[in-house]
Image (cartoon, rainbow, N blue to C red; front, side):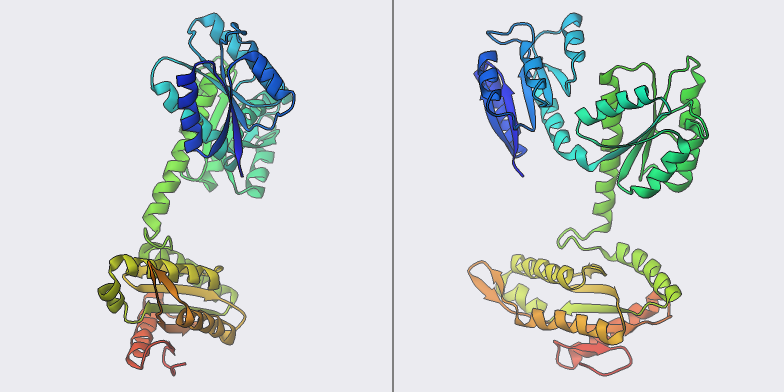
Length: 418
């Protein structure tokens, strides 16, 4: 998807910097240098994802371009060289994304963050909880300027229902004073089900009593805003908490994922496999646990180099995703992988493993100017009620026998090769 950015700026050096920033984020950039040019352009073309708007132009000294751009439904970031309070209030009185003083290079770094957020915020859903429709709509309008996905609820009971329905909600913004279940009670209930790593909570109250902020925080909220709040403070609090959640998610992904293949790593596999196997056993769902590795992998590294070996590992991971998309796949280390699958019956599970084995055996893997072929050996355990460590040991022994017996085959634990 191509996102177009309208850059309204009469300074050629500044327009060039903004263009470079936007292009680094994959925006397609259109530049206008005057209000007259903006009006002419928007009379025939309004298909812009966002705009940066210079406050003062040669033919618009007092921010007239802002209203012009916003009137066409284009979200706008105002760039201004003026720093006085009247200018700030004039800008904030309009539904802009934000304004950025042109003070130093930090202004452009902040602009890059805003343009990035406009792209990514749609992935972050926020639930707004308030029994006052006017207060609720005000918060929703602020969030939609920043391109967030927004859900609403009138009270805490409805909010818990919405959270159960929409798993992509990352933040709850809740008022304190509500019927049925107030904001403090809601926050307490949320924390019984969702950790701070999963969901952020921001409390809001118009009460003058300062104790409410402490009550919210002590009951599990991450932040607090007192009504009436200014949009700048609101956006800073929202962004800071969303960024914290996203950073935690990145850290958790890195901790649980193999850096080369992007499959689960050994630790993540053991944790998830144990949980899934217990569910399969309780529900009497047929499953299998297989360990596999690449045949003669050392020869690939020796003959073609470690970069080629890495490429083979990545390709194998792609085939694993293709064949075992609904299963749990992992790189345990080196050229050794594991997969946990559930299916209709043992034959169905075996055939899926064998389809994978046969496709690897006939694949030509591009390595620079060359193509190489390889194969995999597998050891598999079917629907065992043994502990995971025991099953892994049995599958590993079956894998050893498959390699001893000639490779490119599946050996069933306690059974025959195939």
